[in-house]
Amino acid sequence: MNDQQSAWLEWVKGLPPTQGAAAEWLRVQFGVLGVADPVDLIKSEVLEDLPQLARFVLLRSLWRGAIDAWSEPGSLDQLPAAQRLLAAGADEEDLVRLVRAVAYEAVFVTLDELDTGAEVNATGVDAGWVVMESGADGSPTGRTLAGLHEDLLTMDPGGREGADLWE
Image (cartoon, rainbow, N blue to C red; front, top):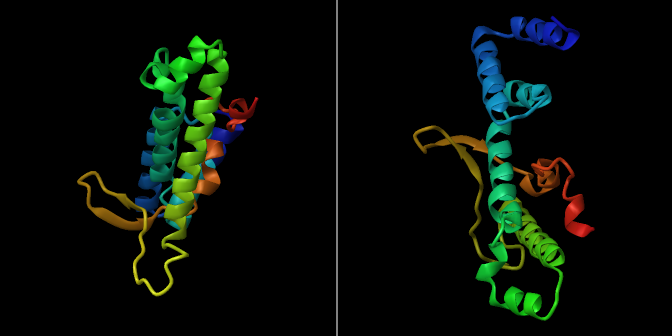
């Protein structure tokens, strides 16, 4: 057993049983998602009651579906403008990088708006929103997913924090 495993077991052992079980469950869940070192995320969720697993799943899903999906072969086929640019001699890798960067910016701005919770320019309008974690049955847990735009870059599945978007 290494030092990290010993420290983990010692920490879990010091928790109340329900929190210890939650920590172990989260460790399995993050492991399934391929998170190599989820300890800080687990501690934050267990001790601070922040929905780190839901944040991770949402942000990683946005990367894969809205941003990285443009790297798939044939992804530019659905864009007539891209087809025209390719026919005119544009570099396909540059176009993919451009589309991914635009997708990233759109996701970032959307998350920033969701994090704001209200339209700041709608003076006198009493309306807002919140992004909330849900349970397995789809019902809200009451735990808000806040600051999503702040962590978008760190969720790049490629581990480059979006650096390849601006090369």
